[in-house]
Image (cartoon, rainbow, N blue to C red; front, side, top):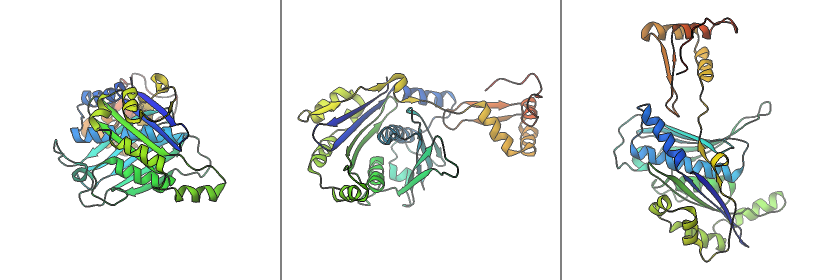
Length: 323
């Protein structure tokens, strides 16, 4: 079962979270495979790491809205997206326009010409009039501008810029598990600008965070993927006084969820206009729309399509199946 574990280090300004996506991650991949729309393995690993990172970041900020993690590449992977809702429902997708080898590295997939970007968008659930989503963008490199080796480099750099807080991330994914460990220095409490200045002054200098981050960095990808949370935390922090909270699992934990629906697709088709839809029908006999996130395909035959543009309550009978 997919789980999220939160913990604190007693007496130290350091918090942590560990997520393991198992059944939910496998369900997502299974749906893509059933739709004959699977991604190459390196892309699946990237999306798994993004899903784990998105859950960790959403849980960390406790935001009442969607957190959308996007990677815009300049190589064969032009876009990779992970979306996480406040209830930790997540979904991922990617747009692949070129060949991705079985052993392709991140630099070769995303940052061939050094123009790749990572964007994190916070889209409020209940927007006020005129309110726009918040978005932060960073280049695809770590804080030292080294070549892109790990997605965690980019996200650590983002959180340092956006929150002025030291963060250490360890991410890993395969076709069975997507997992992540986050260690972060707690912000200084206080009034306004003074607390902000103290947070910036502490960057890289807090001995407790540096020690615990170093311990976290010794965790291998294989260990993160194969060991349960209890074993990971015990092996890494057996000398620390760790206060753990009740794990979030099941209905309260991370899980695959796609918000697509026939109604949403119908609204999108109305936006295209009657003339465009009639042109597709004349050429193909039906309109087929596949969800980029879960692979479900929605079909609209000529009767369905005619109903899209009729007044409410006057749709013709006998519409086709939902998908």
